[in-house]
Image (cartoon, rainbow, N blue to C red; front, side, top):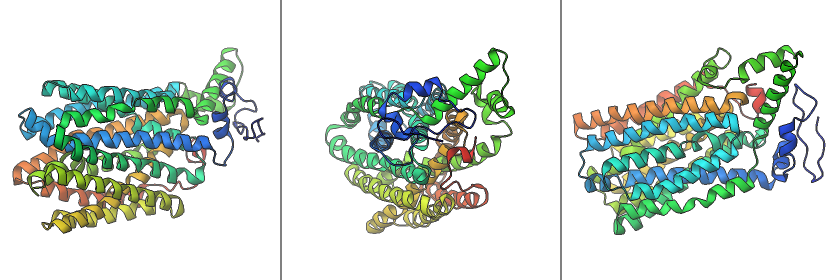
Length: 466
């Protein structure tokens, strides 16, 4: 059931477990931006504010990651490092960043999505100048570690806020398209590196993204809290108060409260959630292993083995990001039209084919052509990947579960898998074999998606998991 509030937006539908709106939701209903997403299936300005905030967060994530990848040859030279030394430093930073992947979503299950999203982006923007001013590689690694910790909340928080506020019929589309802003961030990083780092040094280039702290104010002022989270908190409070005064609750409420009252890692591996956890772990780990080699070593590969200048490989990253943006926008349209699984498989196969052709190419025109073509599927598959992990878990542990899944995946793909890439490079003297592992992994992932990943297109979150 629903009613219409004074501002013309539908009031929230009642929780199946209660005919009353809880006190926390009563508080949030005072704000028009919450009312705009709490009960209506029609799009409002607030929906677009939420999507924009998530897109900007992903854009800054792309800018951060790609800038540091693009300047890696300069950092190695500036600090007089060997390749294994640089790899070890970055793996330390990645390992610290794993804590952020779990910490922010875990907090989000306790304190909500919106404010924490603003906080972690603000921390990122303030820490960028610290990395730029690092006098030694040790200080650089510490700053990089803190940056990873700060920004890694975006992996889960933004997608969860979108999933929990946008209509189900558009959920996959908007998560994928906002995810595409990562590619625009990568494009901007390529432009910054080519124009700033090439002329003024890597330190100045790293300072440029530090001017984005005002985004936190935008998120805090225009984005409401998730109605799913608010109602979950009210339900928890209602059951707790009923039990405290000796009352009785339904078997459904009792079972739900037994799981919801304590949010932590153990919950993610309970029998009712374990199938979803295993599917999400497969998707997330495969995603990070596939991306890890390109994300960490492509600028070095193009610089040392293809003999591209800083300006040329930075320009390639500009178009790499633009093609990825187009790929994710296309995926965003397909994901709600033909389903998550089918779109997933198509993007993986496309990326695998053109990645293979790219590795074997020596001609510059072919390198550019095949390189930009593999970007479509290689970056496009992140749309269904992040959509699945955002929607597959129940609201009561959606944050913690996303944190566990992406933290494990980050460790596997970005901390452990680089040992494989560097071992292959050291053994063969080239990154070619390491890059050829990517299409093999993409085909393996496509097979796994076909066999194990469920289809959630068009379903409400509580239909998927309660």
